[in-house]
Image (tube, rainbow, N blue to C red; front, side, top):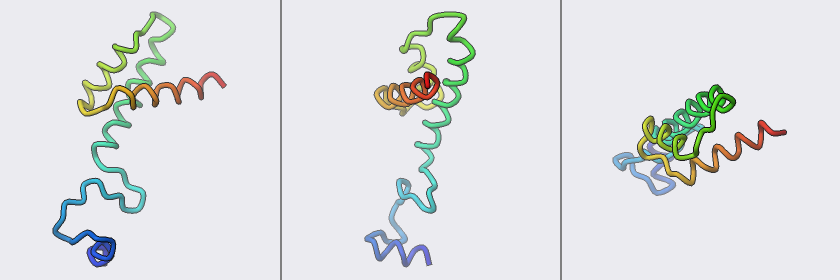
Length: 87
């Protein structure tokens, strides 16, 4: 059933659909990036009061967990989280 539905939207059952979302599921790379940011956010929250944490260290830690994470995306995710905390 799924393969026939995909062929209706232009994907054959033989094509690579690694970026295709089914039932809200994220592709592996996106899940890994989000997990890496969440992990580094927890680390940041534990350490931000005891010392100044430069953004370059945050990027380094996220990319150590997920090498494909984009710096601008990391920045925007941390900005969102910081805005939520400051409310």
